[in-house]
Length: 166
Image (cartoon, rainbow, N blue to C red; front, side, top):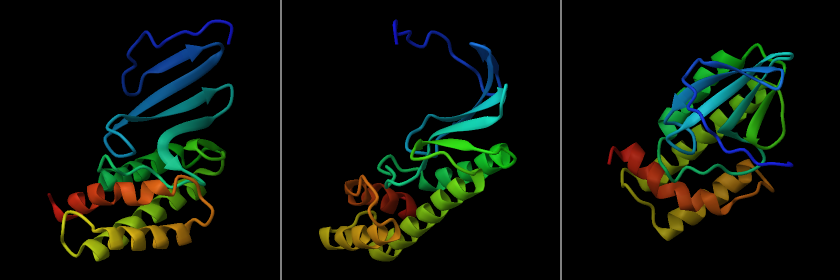
């Protein structure tokens, strides 16, 4: 880039912008992704697509250490409504693809992760080293060869705390 330009404006949920001949619309999702500030940007013209940010991790294990796994699942449903008719979406991590496939794979991963954490934590708000190792084994088997495997154990206690209500 010849000259870097930093963000200089706050864009509200549902607001449309024109940038260099492209029309974009922002959809503020809030908590429920890998942080408290998640959004989807849809390209409205000249073509239609969506940029999902950290709502979808394709080919890598997601960061769940901020908690909010249940809100993340709800946001995936909202994203399916927003993007279901689009030919292609672009995840924050991984390759572009069909919305149903990418959103469905992320949903399935989060459900499997939460189920494994719930079982291994047995109502506790934390997991021990042995449980984290077993969680890592299970989730690595779901996504063989996926990057960021260290995030599996790192995120376990946040999800255990969320699921236990603490």
